[in-house]
Each structure stands twice: as structure tokens, then as C-alpha cells.
Length: 238
Image (cartoon, rainbow, N blue to C red; front, side, top):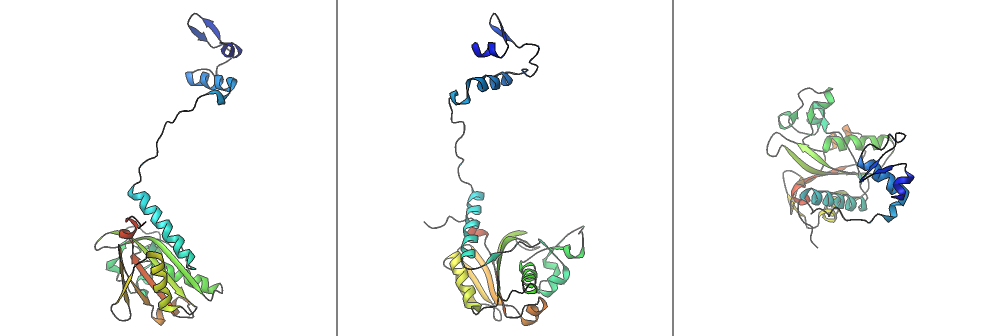
């Protein structure tokens, strides 16, 4: 009662009335705030109003993606963030038929005519920018969505690209095993190695010299791209 009186309220039976000079006291919560301010918030007992939510598939995918990024950074790779769009010329250079890519109905420009079906074009552009700035060794990765007209319309892929240094294909195999654990490499078409593992499917190869030179690379360029949705959604071993 003393606090209410100090606030200027008057008692009329079983009710308290706010004075005319306190137009800010319109709701119960306004009065609660004033009383707490006068009495001290430390005197209000705390109550547990919420409980931790159970983990979800989205949480698991996020945690696994962060774990993957940490492992790749530990192997000396830097993360790249490239556009989800790609130009027809970039598709042609990287050997992807336009029919396999999802066309954008109203693109803002020719360089945004398609959604990327693979990560290669964007990572090659990133390599070219690094080389133009004087980098002799480039190690980049990107984990993000790719879009296709066949099969799953959207999937999550990991792209790894490396040029310069002396590691070559053996370095890339080691990086993939460090990132994912048990990974198998089998001979594919030409000099391509097929990459398989729990929840993983992809390939590893040395890019053609002409393609590497198109993007200003001065040394051999090695590239791996792996679909990782299954791996992201799996509980990691203890």
C-alpha cells in the first residue's frame, strides 16, 4: 500500500485509482512496472517459464555443416560464398548442358539466366579473382544448394577446389577423408574418381588444362564435388 500511495494512487474501498497526473497508468502491466521499479526487481521471485526444445533434423544438419566447415578450415581451405545463379557461357565452359539446369523465368541479367546445377563455375571465378590478386596457391570450399531438372530439384553439395602447391589428387583425397571419415575412391569415366561414403556421392578430378586457363589458373586445378544431404542428416559416431 505504501508503494501505491507513493505513486499517487488513492484507495477507494477495494480499488486503487490512478491520479489525473499519471496518464501513463492505463493498464495493469503499467502499474506492475511502476511497483517493481519502486520495490526493486530483485525482490520478484524467478520462475522457469520455458524448457529446452528437443533437437530436430534441422539442428542436426546445422551442427554437421558447422563441423564440416571446421574440418575443412583445419586442412587449410577457406570458405567461398558464390552466387546461386550462373550464366549460359559458364555452363558451357564447365561442360553442363543447359537442359540440365533450371532456367530463371525473368533473370535480371544474362549472368543470372540459370540456377547453378553444380558449384564449379562459381568456385572457378573465385580462383580467378585470387590469382589476379597475386595468389600462387588457392584452396577454397563451398557448401550450398545446387538445382537440377532431373532427380531431386534441390540438393546440398560440397565443392572443393585447389591449385598451386604440390599436393594434387592425393591431397584432395586426404582432405575428403579428413572431412568425412571413411570415403571410397573408385575409377570413373576418364581420369575421374568416383567418391562414395555414408550419405555421400560425388567425384574428384583434375580439370582440363584449357578450362583452368580460361579462369587464369597458372597450375593444375583439382576439383571435387560431393552431394552431402545424407551425411548432413546422419548422427555422427560418438
